[in-house]
Amino acid sequence: MKTFKKGLKLAFLVLIIALACFGISLIGGVPLPFSRKRDNTVEIKIEMVDIKEDKTDAATVDFYQ
Image 1 (spheres, rainbow, N blue to C red):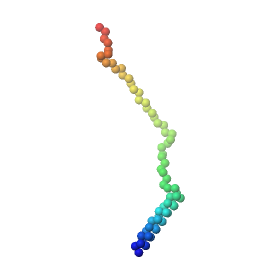
Image 2 (spheres, rainbow, N blue to C red; image 1 turned 30 degrees about the horizontal axis):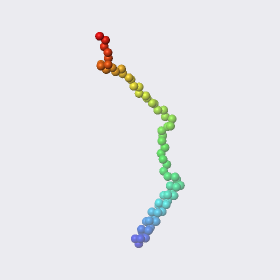
Image 3 (cartoon, rainbow, N blue to C red; image 1 turned 90 degrees about the vertical axis):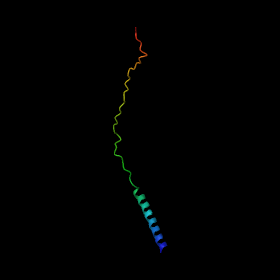
Image 4 (cartoon, rainbow, N blue to C red; image 1 turned 30 degrees about the vertical axis):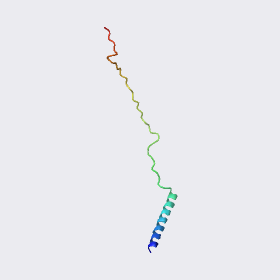
């Protein structure tokens, strides 16, 4: 009786796996969610402007006497 129950459980397991594979092959699996982001979005690009400061060292400045 125990072997019959084990065999029956195994048969149902194989049947469920076979039905699942058959259903996936018909439907095609789970559809992937699509992105709602538009392809034509305008991206604002900002360029940083470097300001060059006039740096002079005290040792390099010549003073007239």
